[in-house]
Image (cartoon, rainbow, N blue to C red):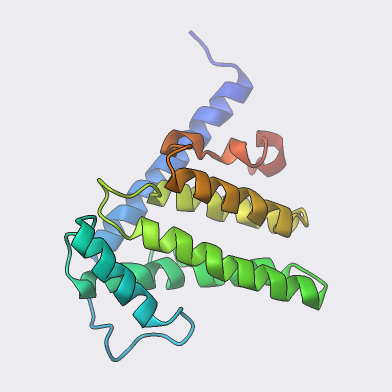
Length: 191
């Protein structure tokens, strides 16, 4: 059976995205851990936010790691990694730079800060407990760039906030978070 042109492009995109996610996971897993006590970047939310949340999650059993490796994952979320250098901080910068009005920049930066916290705290839990995974973050990151290009920054952040809230209460699942949920194929066709 032959696939039509549109189906072939969709399959190619899915395979490309899957390979990209697998490469990200393998590189992140191979990175070394460094102490976060004395070298917590000023560009990240206060370290104590994550330490407090870690303590709560550890007592509820949703985290099995120790604090330092957990905080390294937090840093990677915000700063990126060797393979995926566009961490949350860079995505926030791209979004705010793409807005003209200063009041919108301030509003967008505040909302991205809160959204990043909500995503990161959930994502950093053990895989078997979290409701947000790396593939969702990759989908959102790609779609955020499209939102910036199409001048739909605030409306798009509304969509992600709604979806994150729904994921946290299990009204949505991982299979619901796909690129096409946010932009039709023709809006981000890069082939």
